[in-house]
Length: 289
Image (cartoon, rainbow, N blue to C red; front, side, top):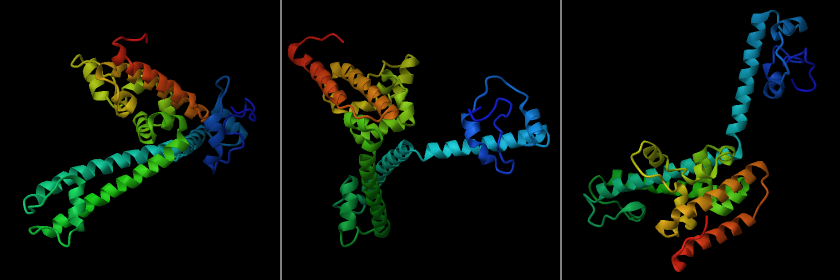
């Protein structure tokens, strides 16, 4: 139980039976040193008429506590960031898929058909779309551009929000990659609890499972491949670069979650380590890891 409750009172002390939500704090935070006959104590205290009424009240109180916990979790800043980056990726993917369909369709009636999002923009800028299904083609082009515009706005939102939610992670990985790592982990707290080796292969789960089944080699990196520290390193040294980056990202995530204090030294240490790794191409050797 919480400190303000005596051991004989239980979670139901001072709880209004008609207002189960009044038990949120003791239900969520309370503890007891030893089990007691809580139903009998609740009846004795006049909170419940009988044992069945006690368990009904307990059910309602725990459900209210669970709803409150879920609401707190889903409205947290990092969860909002997760939704934003996933929506951004969905918009980009859908826009590109529809742009391919548009180019394929437009190419059947338009001698000047192009490709990609630019062709969609070109179509809606024309005085009239190409002949033959022109209304439908023009409408599809508008939808493609709308989706691309929405993706750009969501990207701008992610770039603004990530540094306030995870400043060290955003500084090391860049706002968009940092947001994707948080999204893949399921939240900043979950990411902060993951070892660097897991962070290194986030986004490469299919390759990792294939490796565990004996069908492929172990992946050296997942989504962090898009970071310049990894992508800008020659292939034979990318594993080392990915390990170095993942190690610093793991530290950054923990600092962001548990304290939020800015640690510029992490960036300097990563830059020094990556410089050492990339210098191997010049001296032909390998440094100690």
